[in-house]
Amino acid sequence: MQEKIKVKISVNADLCISCGVCTAIHNKAFKYSEKTGKYIVTEEYKEITVTKKELDLLKQTAESCPVLAIKIEQVK
Image 1 (tube, helix red, strand yellow):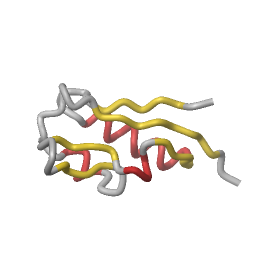
Image 2: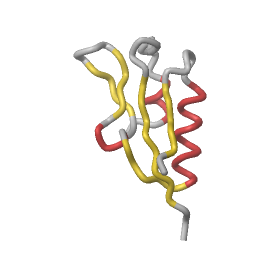
Image 3: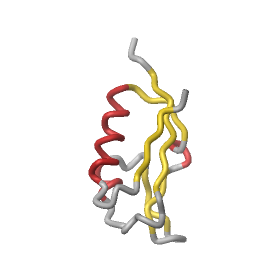
């Protein structure tokens, strides 16, 4: 059985430059907000329990953000 890890994901709107890298890598966790003109975390992914494989993909997404606006925090 795979280990499950609970995480909180957020996007700092002040840093986001709306490049879309996050949705190119993980389109279930991030979406474009017409209201703000920035990318945001989908409701489903704001606080979620994921596998190690999914966490690795989320970390890759955060590291690919050119302004490092994505934050992933492990929740105990």
